[in-house]
Length: 182
Image (cartoon, rainbow, N blue to C red; front, side):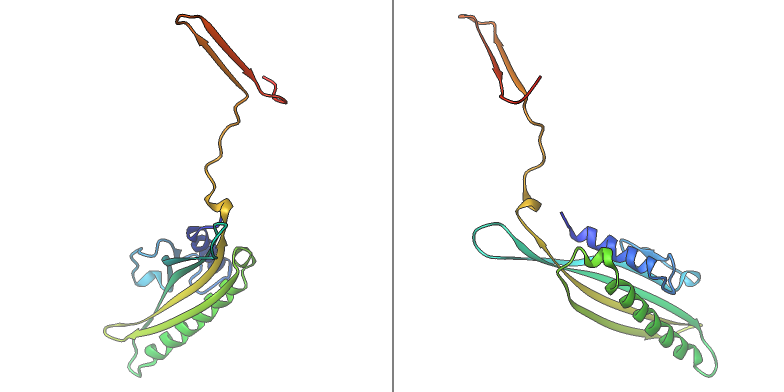
């Protein structure tokens, strides 16, 4: 059974394996605090999950999971405002690295029907000694969940049932199932 949590883990693994500028600084859930010495950093969380029925009859859903990827870079400020330009270049490079790592990840794409959307927003701040740049990518991941994903939990087969009643009238019951040895 594929779940949205599985997909978030697969996206994180793809980014780490993709050798981005963030290296191993890929965090889930995406609420870890960071500070200057930890940039670039990437944080992930499942932002939304929507299940749409495949129709009447057998249970089935097309599931659209949105994994939100937050990437942050920083560059020192300079008198010629070169830090802002360097932060922007670093952010665009990191965006490209993330997209290549995720979209080319076979373990992730093997779980999916498609990538229906990739929505990116960039933001920059030059207030202070460091230029910060941030990127938010909402990555749409579509997959299928069918009847087996909602089946009851696995149980142990019953091999033998024994009943021994000690009330009047005395009775006993011993059932054996064909093909099952005790």
